[in-house]
Image 1 (tube, rainbow, N blue to C red):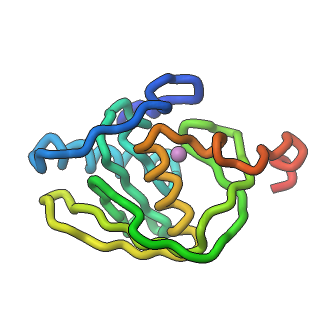
Image 2: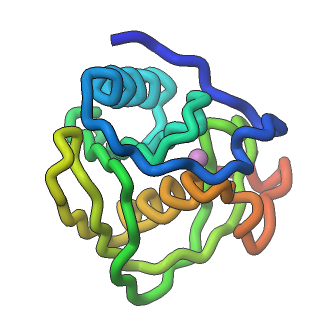
Length: 159
Ligand code: CO
């Protein structure tokens, strides 16, 4: 496994739509392993492939404090959602920036695992937020575009 560089604010790759994964090969497995390591190293709860410079529909999420509960998503799609939550959201590609973002409170996602098998992932609260945030990345959408507003420096200091 290896750490990869995280693409930062202003890089045009963050605005591009990702292509579906067709080959569930070793290259994909290395990408997923590297993304999990990179996300954990940066203390993030999610990371999408374009954030490491790959325009592929791949994301990893881990909302556990122990960093031992990785969810791997290949070609994910939201197939159901309900409710609404409003809260602070950040992104590893936008260090030090926070926005207030409305998201569904529950989402159901259909995806594939690293071997191409169909999986269903359901999430509430933080997991629902992370699922929406990462899937947005795969469509070239970053949280700043969907935020109600960004937090001021004073508000961030109080956090
Ligand atoms: Co992000």
